[in-house]
Image (tube, one colour):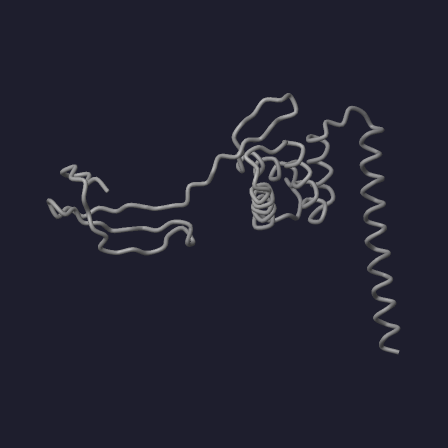
Length: 170
């Protein structure tokens, strides 16, 4: 490591400790030539991930863009910032775990909507209305009907589990 003081190309590590929740290692170094001490930070270099948009253009994956969209959809809703951050983290982890250098914006949007639907239905509809660009009321109504059908199906599954548990108790 080059010394910022004398520009000698040799230094020794005096102290190392984790920083940024273990994602970074902070190192105190000392120049072998002049004795100047300085700090460096070492982090894993993430490979760039490109998002292919609907029009075919590519841009670098930006978790802040997803965060802003989810915050906007959850505005004035009982969805906390911790939950929003968890959704964005989970989407980023899913996308990066694919092991691809490029991913479609449709896939990213579907991941977000899947997680939002489990957290808050109104936030989900708000996000879907922008993401899917509802052209008219019939498309919006179709989305609502699909959501209601999923909700009804999950409630039926819960009811049958409760009945099975009650039967076992008898």
